[in-house]
Length: 101
Picture 1: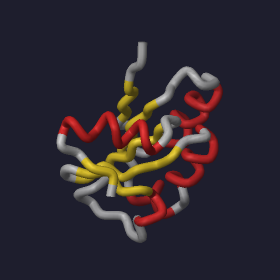
Picture 2: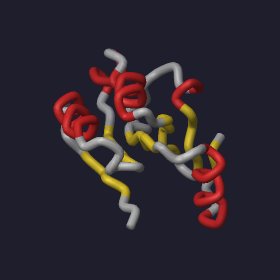
Picture 3: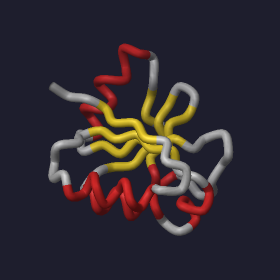
Picture 4: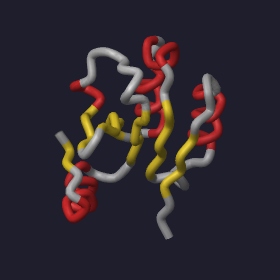
């Protein structure tokens, strides 16, 4: 069965990432709060690379791909890292009235 892992680790993003990366492909979807220092030092792109995943910022009603995010915003700190193809993510979100923007 599939499960989504969610972590609020208050500055320990790198330690958690190392553990997830060493778990192989067991974790398909991972949601993590990313605080400003981690965002500004490249944690999101590093995590996506290590996990071989796409990164999306979780916003109200939509997911925004990492490539479209220029600055950290205190109101939007949760990120989805997923190994699922974008088409699968969109198909899962559509019935729940969420969008990939």
